[in-house]
Image 1 (tube, rainbow, N blue to C red):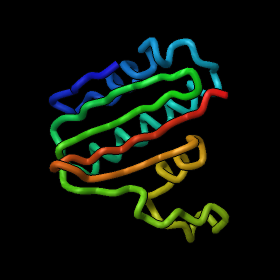
Image 2 (tube, helix red, strand yellow):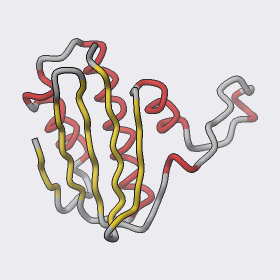
Image 3 (tube, rainbow, N blue to C red):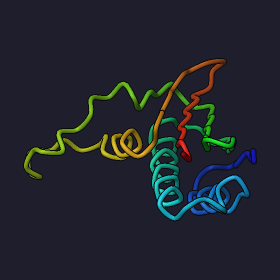
Image 4 (tube, helix red, strand yellow):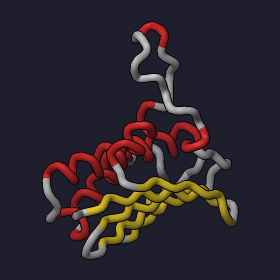
Length: 130
């Protein structure tokens, strides 16, 4: 599945449902679907809040052993993986705002990658199925 969403504003639910309803994801276990849904929501929120892009392309690829979700947008360069992981053991009142969503993606997915190429942010996350 590959789909471009433009304009981007106000379409988070549509983007999430598009990924969750595609054939590459629809038949997966509830545990894996939960992780994908949460991570898609977090990445999409980062794109909306930080890149300034008016569009996003989302592609879902499935092999026998994994499912990969790729995001591409035309906003300003923003590498969410470059930010230091939050200290989840610190008391709540001492924690910094931001970074928890991408931290969760790094924990729930088997691989997350970012690159900025051809004036595009590209974020890819993969979950092994076996």
